[in-house]
Image 1 (tube, rainbow, N blue to C red):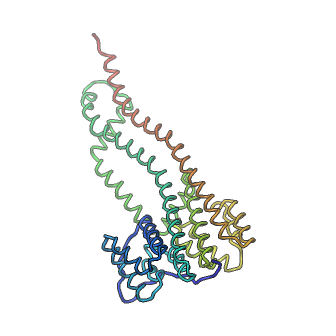
Image 2 (cartoon, rainbow, N blue to C red):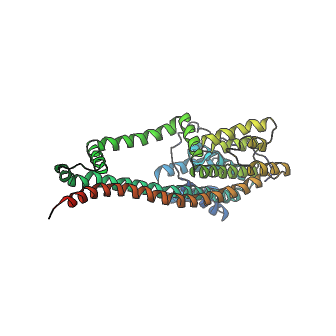
Length: 368
């Protein structure tokens, strides 16, 4: 696999309209895996695609298969047809498949691609799973406190306000909070929903906003190290596989940048293209940005460049950074759990004290 091949970039289909279709990473992984099983069993590519077409039930995906089957039956490369669906497969998968077709090892590359998609999916799931628990606990705590404040406490409030006593500060604060939530709770909920929707719209449409958020995430304690190692894992794995498949360094860097979601890292990876165009080594560029690329990366990349074994070095580094992600996600859950318990205790305790304190004072003032 030491040959060099031209990069295949996605092209718009000419004439016939290409159907819009969405694949999750898991669905894309299963498609590539099943295709590798069929071709590995000796089933011709066109017949394999037709088998997968018959197994599918989604109409939009069926239309995609119809386009690909028609293209392949007309003599086009599979990669050329899949490039029409750039929103589904992307440059990385298309080029890995193209190299396999050109070098006569399509099945081998399909197996390798399916395995790498599986690793990326598993890595993403680890990060998401580590964040779901603390988010769930926080939302549940806020919801429970809000229910107590809005529905339970108001039933006791008339008793407190009818007494000619000075209520404790915590009780007065809870009464004010309860009145506010009952009067403006709907507005507050709508405002939060609107802010969340606006956030995602800006993330999709404003590169400056997206870039700023990515910068903040990288500098956030705990989350920052996970985000850094996650992006470094994808960077090393994608670049290493593309180089191993025979792509030129500039083409491989361009594809790697396009598959990187973090805009801060995408900017630096694209800058590496200019670096290599000038004849400079990637390791030198990495050394100039220690905040994004830890010392071990330029050191080992430099060795890989010197020995001519850069692709294997990058794949090895991706495994190291993935192990760091595993460790960081485990530490995140362990670090946040006591903080969340304290936060939950403070909120629930505040409500309990606000209710119990005036009742206790009233009973103390009662005479037999």
